[in-house]
Length: 518
Image (cartoon, rainbow, N blue to C red; front, side, top):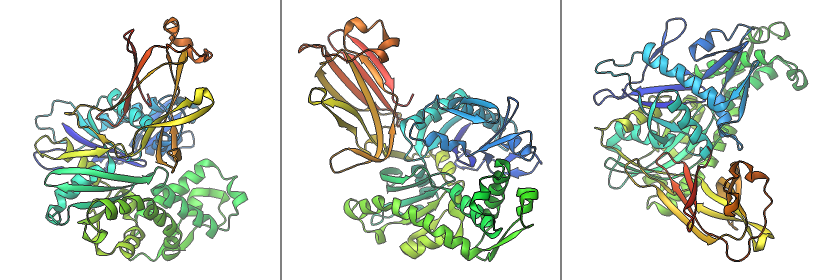
């Protein structure tokens, strides 16, 4: 079976490839009802872990601790496979937590879903989405966890690029020789991405991408929860003493209330007593929908500000003005909130098109991408600058060496990796490589803004140190003289958007290979 999987912050959506159709896979929840997503939730009790619907089924039991939105752990500036996550009385690596969650997803797809079973051999050949601004560690952990869980991942695609496939599948008639670009606006549960996609026939080129790793539907839920506490006259100092379980219940109720809103909604009722129990000052509070939308406008404006580099690239380099594009395509579960489309239309006019299936658009696009007979091709982008800090001026200063810029192409699985090389004579006994990814470079070429620093890599230039690889971190850096070994660094972008580094002592034939973020 061929699947497109959108691992979301709050919900994971799966679509399948079924003879040229791309239906969303439905699951049975604990009550036997059919839903078109799998909850991205974990629960723990005395070392026992449950996931998805099984975790939601025990969410109200005080013996269980529920963890939501754990995908956000992956996007932290120091995220790595070994970062520990604490849930109840259990600590485990984020890679292990994600692997266990995905094993439960695999079991649900195979045994608790409406997947087509004709000619099914049990293989789950998958294309998986990552946020466009995902750094190397996030991509590596995602890929490794899916594979450990039993999925055959053949590609990782940036989420808005996948939505571009769904747009072409649904709105092909809007793509003309005069209007070959769309802007994808993707507001998910925990992240926001925007991409400029150029489309000619069935070929897609993700020209440029921008976004925010820490803004999504969770933040709109938090805004409503804060308003509910304000309406209940619960002071900020009192909120610090509220139990975590009560606040989680309030966030859940606010999420559900938000998702029920439609353009005709006038008020939002929150049952405070059901969340806070005896600590609640009132049984329920009522919030005017217009007031909630006013609170949300700055969040929506933040997404519009974040997408300005995409709009600027369209005006400057794509050969089209904003008014001449095929459309701004709005996807992502959080984009269903009416104020999102309203604000975008006020700013950009009638070119704004909201997907009829905003929560599933990315999964459907991924299913199209995994379909060998669909004939679509994608040229995706790295979307973050990658480079290394080096010592300069004989060790008196540190300089940043940019290796790939944010618009470097990610090769397809059929293409050779995109490669950059550095060759030099080593001057020291060991080389310390401090790799960095970032969203932007300042005018001096120095990383700034959203920066991710990876674990330091240490390579032994002194050949006498090569049997002490485990001890290199404690070796003092010393100059070797003028005739150190000839070193070649090769940097390759793989088809999954991960940078692989090969450092070689050319004359000795000694090399080591590193996957940045592993």
